[in-house]
Every structure is written in structure tokens, then in C-alpha cells.
Image (cartoon, rainbow, N blue to C red):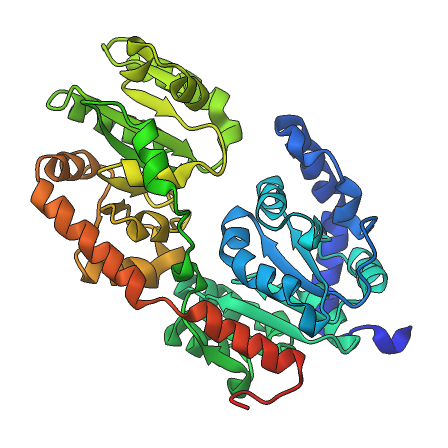
Length: 441
């Protein structure tokens, strides 16, 4: 067994010591999240390495973290899972209930599924022994030292796909080079979104010949064929719509204030407010009541808006989107899309969905998680960057200028079309690693 354990070095010993000290707080946090969000309560044992699902010995283990990564990876995972010629089974893990829901919805029983173990040595070792994966494929920035080092010690290929590393994150890893350098050396492949990300990985210690630039697989979004039809069914005659998607605390108040200002000139305007975490709906009810109580604006929940055909409900000024998986037709319905996590320092969320549907995009200044995508959209004049104070005037300007909205929408669609292809390039590289071929072979 000793031969299958990662070699110890001072940085790893320190990291493991810190994790052991943090264990009680990790357990307490999981319990607390379960109180606030009951979806975190079931299957908690999986987070400590206990896998009780179908037999998956020798499966390709694909870790997709949460909903966004799962949606982006699903086509590649599906292709791998249903290709009977390769003889592969696939296990998909996530860290969040929303990610788990997307695995079930998009991949069904074509793959095994559970939560990924926390990065404690006992959990990782138990899980690796139970699953014994043929390869470990991680998404974007899921760099967990114990997991990667222990997998590599067992001879399991370790791959990072759709990899990204912002300047801020790179500085953090540089400060932790006593731990991170040996971890990065373990990767058999790092398939990066951009050349800038690739260079940062190399500078931090990743082997240059194992770092490839393939593009962002999220550009290869599959838009459902009935999206426009769904949007038309949701929209009400004589109403106009804009959406604030993936918003965080601190943003919703600003968005609602901008909307109330816009209502003065556009009384038929409806805001589709979609928080990043729908379980915050009760909190947002209080916010909406507070901001609308002295106005004529009214609001309702998404379910009531969809099912109610009476005139008063159809003309609500704000719709609170408290369900997952419903945004694509709402992006299509909207004249403008604000992408959240960007007016607060969360790094922003994925603007590719609205862009792919030709919807003009607005972002705040904190969009470093998708910096290259936003840079491409802004350079093409398909997106506008705003601040807390300029959100309202920027929204008003776009609502008053249909020609600019049209031009921005066309440009957004062109950016998405020009950047497609990363999925196939990534799949080709994965095939080479899994079959033992050299890159380019």
C-alpha cells in the first residue's frame, strides 16, 4: 500500500496538517449548509469517500464541480460514455447539488454519479481504492493536491480540461509554490482555454510539453432547437423583457433599482431576476417587497408567471426565477442580459449563453473568471462593462436604441461562432492520453 501513496514533502505535510485542523469546521459547515439548503443533506457520506453506487472499477472519472461545468462537459462525457467501441465506463462527480441535478438531467443512467470526496487523505484514498479509475479528468481550476498526488502515485493519468488561470489566481498559486509546483508536475495534460492561461501554468511549474491551448469548450454550447419557440410561449404581447442572470448578494438591489428607474420610461418592461442560487428566493422576496412597496411595480415567482394566464399576473414588473435549467429561453426572450457575479468581486459568470442567442450583454468590472470571453465580446462591441452607478443609464441607453441592440446581438453571435471547436480538440487530446499516444500522434 505504501507504494500507492504520494511521496511526502514539507509543503504537502503542512497542507495535510492544515486540513486535519480544519476537519471539524468542514463538518460543521456541511451541517450548516444542510440546514440552510436541505439538498446538501442527502449522500453526505460520499463527501468523505464512501461510494455506494454501481460498480465503476476502471471507469474514467470526470469531475465537473457544479452546474455550469457539468453543462459544458456533458456533450464530451456523453460521447465518451455511449461510444461502445472504446469500452469505457464513465463516473461523473460534482461538489454541489445543482451540479448533481444537471448530471441526472443531461446524462441520466449513461454514467455513474456521486459527489466527489473532500481533499482529505483518508477520503481520497478510500474513494480511489473503491473506484480505481482508469483516468482522472478535472474541469477548469479543480486543482486538489491530495487527490492529484494520490492518483498519480497509483499510476492514474491526471488531466485538466478547459483549464483557466487568472492573473489573480496565478499570484495565489505562486505564493503557495511550496505546495503547488509538485502538484502541477503531476498532470499528464493541461488543455487550456487561452495561450495566456497556458503560459501561467507553465510559469508555475507545469511541464510545457503537457500544456496545450485548445480554446474554451463553453463556446461549443448546444442551443436546444425549441428555444425560440419556448421564448415565444413565455413572452406576453406588448411586454418587453431584460434579464439579470446569476446574480449574487449585493447585486440584486442595484439591478432592481436600475429596473425601477427604467420603468419610468418603459412601463411595459419586465425584469427576469435569476439569482445564481435559487435557494435564496426567500431572501430575495424580502428585498423585492422592500423595493417595490412604495411603487406601482409588482413581482411574482417564475412558477406563477409561467402558469398564470390572467392579465394582472402576466403584467408583473419583476419575475423572480427560482428554478434551475430555465434560462436559455429567457435569454432568448430578453432584449438585454446582465451577467452577475461581476458588480461584486466574484469574478463574473458565463456570458456565452446569452451571446449565442444574439442577446446584448452587460457585465460589471469583476469578470476575471471569464476575462478572455468578455474581452472578445467587448472588442466586438457585443458587450458593455458597467459600474454600480452606470448600470441604470447603460440599461436605459440600450432599451432606447434598437439598432445598437441589433448590432450587439449580431456581433455576439459572431464571437461565439468564431470560437467553436474546442470540444473536438479536447476530445482528440483525451483520446491520445487514454490510448497512450503522444500529442499530435
